[in-house]
Length: 120
Length: 115
Image (cartoon, rainbow over all chains, first blue to last red; front, side):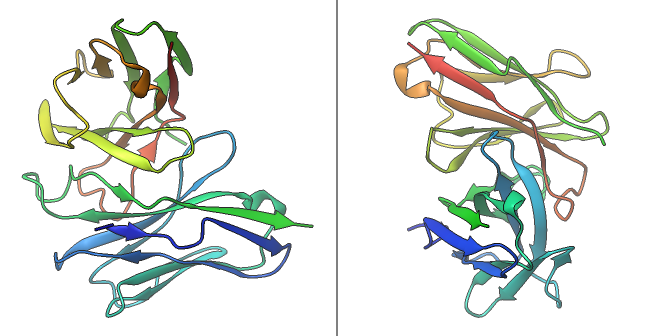
């Protein structure tokens, strides 16, 4: 079973519109973290936003916000007022606290990504 | 802003050859990772390294792979006998102690092409 599911392989959005990228996850651990990364065509991975499983409020970072619905195991990324530079691959990822280091060294599990294209 | 540095950015190697991918993590970070991304696919975790030993590894990280922190700054991934299917982008990442909330910092990647 997929740990991270991103159901939108590609999206076209008009510039200045808000966009929601879907992410659902599967874990039985009570403690976990959810991340979103942006990968432009140049290839690097850029950290956008983080949500902890115990966080009471949805995370926000500038134009990025995370719509965290724990009961539904959903962690959608919302980009407000999209810009042409937002065109990229977007990956949702999860970190479960299961390693011997108590969480510090656990790897991320990524979804397959959503290719977002912002149109002028 | 501190960054994770990976060299080389692109490496072409013959099948069966050994390759070493190099990374310089952020200096005060304690946790180091390697990930790979086959072209057009998702990013996959390979291995994590903490306190001079492997902390966790995935099924992909078999006996042909090894990691090393030979000195205080470098973190390397060695592939002993490369196969065509090892062609991928390899990302190094690092995080601080308790870097859970702060996220990982990824390097720009090394694109490995096995011919």
